[in-house]
Image 1 (cartoon, one colour):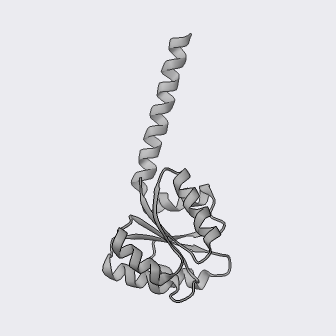
Image 2: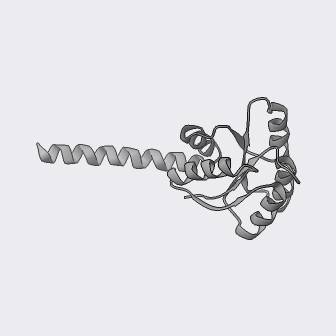
Image 3: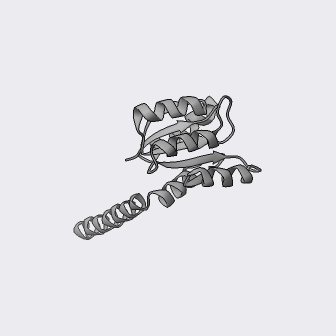
Length: 144
């Protein structure tokens, strides 16, 4: 289970992303509405993963990524973006983000993005899936 910080200036988007992460079995430990708050909360909470909106008031996501990565180079950050922000996504990757999630953040999109930056979670999920299938087959044979 990952500890996640969700950053977006839209409360609706934050809640939607948080719900997706919780549905995937991760823990959303905090939310922030702008880059400045994200940096402050990051220092306090030390999440495993940060989802970062690109365009926000006060401090945009790219600047927040630069600050966070300068303090904690190993943290994984996924940008959350809309169509048409490709140049900003590239800037974010150069600043240290590990990938992006295209809005709207669906279960499938989030899972794919997490799998890319945390391949060990994808492997563990596949092992659990295989074990569950084997168990179901054993139970089926016992019932016959």
